[in-house]
Amino acid sequence: MATIKDIAYLHTADEFELLRFHRLRFRENDLSEKYFLNVTFEECDFSAERFREATFRNCRFVNCNWALAKFPESALFACDFTSCHLVGIDWTQFKWKRQLTRRKNRFDVSFTDCAMNYGVFVAMKMHRAVFRDCLLREALFTDADLEAADFSGCDLQGATFGGTDLTAANLSTARNYAINACANTLTRARFSFPEALALLYALDIDLEE
Image (cartoon, rainbow, N blue to C red; front, side, top):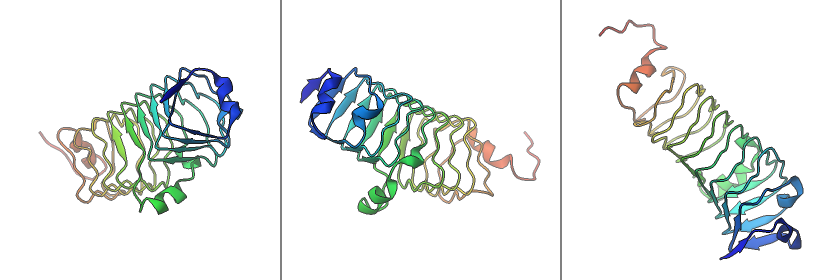
């Protein structure tokens, strides 16, 4: 796998395969309308930029900064994010419908040890989504389908859930969440004490020690 350290290389073609981009600072026109297959991005900076109609398939992002970036009409297929800064991303901008149709409703983008605070996931279909050891503070999951999602080790302080399907979701090691058991679907969802007590706060009951 060749390592690319010169941003000018991106302007030589529209499709890129089996490459590694290392420590590059991307600008708006660098990635727009380009296709990446089996590409690794390491320590790259996409922050606060707007990338139109970019496609990433089987790509890996490691220690990358996507803070406040925008990806209208772009697509992610079978991609992994590790130790990335993804604060303030509106994930609804991506073309998920096509991906989910081809992947039989499985959300095949995974996140590990990422900062994803203030992320927007409203009404997204994210069956079996993987968020492991991520910061998801103030994230919006209203009306999202998170059936069988994995939130292992995640910090969900201030995250909003309402009309959210968390059927069989794993929150057994998640923390700081406040989920209204009456306003969300929690069938077979996994929780653990003492964090699970937060599920009772919205009920009209008195808790005694």
